[in-house]
Image 1 (cartoon, rainbow, N blue to C red):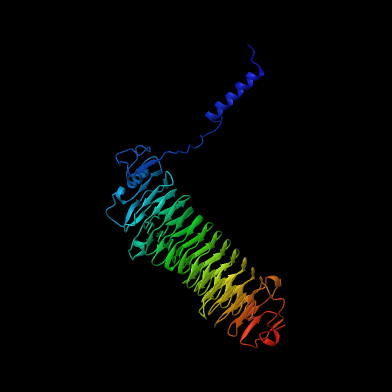
Image 2: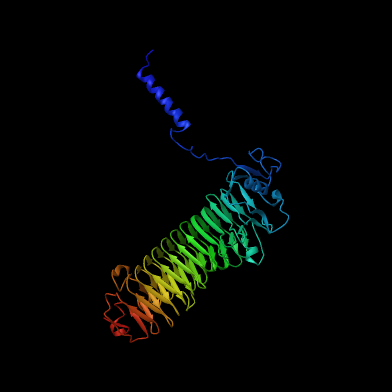
Length: 487
C-alpha cells in the first residue's frame, strides 16, 4: 500500500529523533554526561549508611569528604545544620576538617536555605582546609567560629582556615549562597588563607559581620597566598588594627574583579589594607570607615595598589585619606572613580586628603576621575604630604573641596614632588563649573608649600612661576599680588 506524503514525513521525523538520541553518524565520541549524583549528610544520619539518598545520609561531614575523595561523586549535600555535636569533634581547634582530599574540587552545598556548618560559638574554628584540598561552597552558612590562638598561622580564620602543605596549595571557592558570617579570630575573622599556592576566591558568596582582634576582619591573606573577588559581598566586618573587610599581607596578592566591599571598619583601612599587592579591575569599595587612615583603602609597608577600573566611593577617615591612604607604599590609578569620600576631623592637623592621601609613598595618576571629595583640612581631592611623589599624566580632578587649602590638590610638607604633564585640574585648566573650592580661598585648585617641588607642564591660565610667598596657589583669584604665581 502506498504511503502518503504525510506518513513519509512522520517516518522521517521519527528516524531523525532516533538518530538524535543514538548520536549522529561519524561522531567519534558521545557528549559528556554530567552526573547530578551526590552524597548526603545529616545530623540525623548514620555513617554506616551509603549516603546516596536523602533517606540514607551519612552522619558526619568527615565520612562524606572521605567518601567523595575516594568515590564516584564530588558533591556533598548538607541537610540542615551540622555542628560539633553531630561531627563528634573532641580534639583540635576546628569542628570540621578537609584534609588532603586530592586534586579534584569537592562541592559542599546546602539542600535548602537552612543548611549550615556551625561551631556554636564554642571556641573552635568552623572548618579547616589543609594539604592538597580543593573545596567549593554553595548555598550554605559557615558561622559561630571563634578562636583565640595568637599565632595567625594556627589561629587565623574564625570561620575558615585555608592552609596548603609545603608542596600543594589548598583552595576554597565561596560561590552563590555561601555565607561566612558571625565568626571571630586573632586574624581573619571570617577567612584566613596562607601558604604558597593556597587561595580563596569569592564567586558570589558573602563574608559579613565577622571580627578580628588584629588584622582582616572579614578576610586575611598571608604567606604567599592569593585572594580573588569575582562577585559577592564583603560587608559589615571589623578589625581592631588594619583591614576591616580584607587585609592583604606582605608577599600575598589580591585581584578584585567584581563584587562589593561595603560598610566595613578598622583603625586603618576600613575597606581593605594592602601590605602586599592589590589590583582593582572592577567592583565597588563603598561606605567603609576608619577613625585614622584610609576609609576605603590603606596601603602600607611597601605595598602596592593598582586601580584599573571600579569605584571607591562614600568612604570616610578622620585623620587622612577618606578614599585611599598611601603610607610607605605605591598607588597607580589608570582608570576608575574615586568620588564622594571624606576626610573630616575636629582636630586641627587631621582631616587631610579627602580622595587620596600620600605620605612617604607615591601616586601615579594617569586616568580616571577624582571628584566630589572633601577634607576638613587640606587637599580635598589629593593631599601629598612629607617625602611623597605625585605624578599626574592624565585623568581629572574636579568638584572637590577643602576648608583650609588645596581644594583639588595640596602638596605640603618637606621633600614633596608634584609633576603634572597631562590631565585636568578644574579651575586652572578648564570648566569653571567643576572648579575645586576652599573655604578660605587658599588655593582653590592647587596649594603647594614653599618646601614642595612643583613642576607643571600643562596649565593654560599660568604662564610662568614665581615663588614669592610661603605657599604657591594655583587659582585665578589668588594669583598676582597675593604672591605665588604670576600670569
